[in-house]
Length: 286
Image (cartoon, rainbow, N blue to C red; front, side):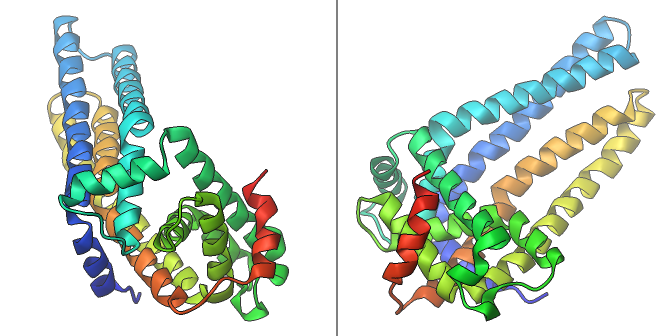
């Protein structure tokens, strides 16, 4: 598996303050999950032990609390940090201090969560249309993957590619985010074959890293919970939650930096095709 780790780390270093700040929130979320499970065990012990019903209630309450926390953070705060991260990945350099300046610039481009979510959703929809129906009309035949398996992998990697395309759109500047996204998609469809193949490799790396983190946490958790006389399933769920948060905090930025760096390098020196931009426009306006 050949990955551009060196380029990814170079891109990541330019956005290190935002990466660390964002990771801090996910780590705080991990501690919150552990705290929720600890409080649950405390009350279960007061109730006389962790029976199957109480254990299920504990897992459900912890998961619901974690999902609600992530939803609130994403809707009111984290989306702006993600936009700031892509802004720095694009090569744009806000004034110092980088953290607050990048967040301010991202807030100007995406004043609320709905504008951020809408543009990301439209970019992913354009990618899905490209993969499923429009490859021959959007790109040369040598760019189109052969076989349903590669198409499935590309669909799974659409989220990462969509963020990379948004980073490319931010690199082009301007205040019209939709026009920049249309131009970024046009550049990707014409010149992004290498970053598309690389996104598949990064997807495999991301999946392997998630599995590795889960196993490293699940095995000791299973042994510990079983030795403590508690349902081992609780430890498995806790391991999955912590592994997901660690993956979001440390693995996802590296993956995104690698794909962004590759796409920006491929698109450098090229201009978007006007006719292709017209074809893409309906996918960004529906």
